[in-house]
Image (tube, rainbow, N blue to C red; front, top):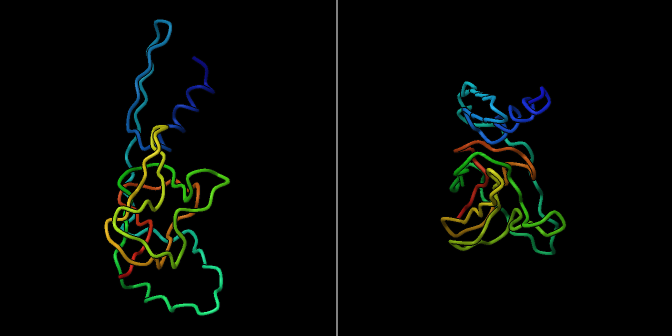
Length: 143
């Protein structure tokens, strides 16, 4: 087992949130462990997306109102089902309970994140391809 492989495994552990990993190869055993860093209480938004202008735009409610959609897992946030596809939702999108808002890739599995309430997407708090933590706010939905 070479240093490059060990470094790649350590990076993978950090990206996926694993706290330990044990690997046996050709009679040698490697055990990697990392300390869990406490997640910040309220992460700062990485980016904000602005809806395309329309003829009669509806005013969006205050960003302090509404319900936050939190990440149920550690992984990579994807706004669309494929790199060349349109995003599931944009700011101003009207959604119903059960609508898919995004996908979070965790351990090579794609997890669709459904809306738990109906309303309008007033804020997208993470960027496409960003690594998200458990409990991190992803969207703000207003009624």
